Image (tube, rainbow, N blue to C red):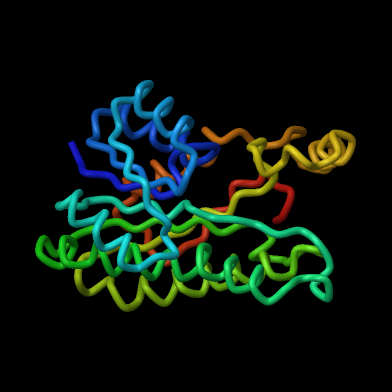
Length: 232
């Protein structure tokens, strides 16, 4: 049994990851920002331990990890998005996007590091996006944050490897979560048709990729696309 910490664990991909790791017998803690009802539902279903925490707040993250203690696996899944023309984006929205999607990883990795270094082992999984690999129109800021996640993953893998810590990344494609709620169903159907596997993804598709990376002991610094072949 391992101690697993998953950020953004109350909904979507994070909730699927909580379910998967809890089902295999791990002790799972998940961080969530504000949706108490969703967090309670996940906790009741899985037995995982919810902790309300905004990953953009470094002090709050340190406090959360002080409650958790030992960490074997850290999954940095918390994220937010913004859709629209970059010229219409306010600076505060830009800053919030980077604070959650990039700086949140910085906060969580640093908070977990004492536990990892004490054991000389650990596994970190970050969550990027296919748009972090190729960019997306009207999602320039989001693409920039997810591209930064990929670069950070690769750099950390080199930096932390000698300490026995592996760092990998999953890059989901179109995954049917709340983030897709505002997308025209016709657009989603068109994207599914363009995928070689003929469908859009489910949160558990990504969770299973995360599980693989936690067990692949000779894999580090890699970006695993989970997009049904939409981006190859």
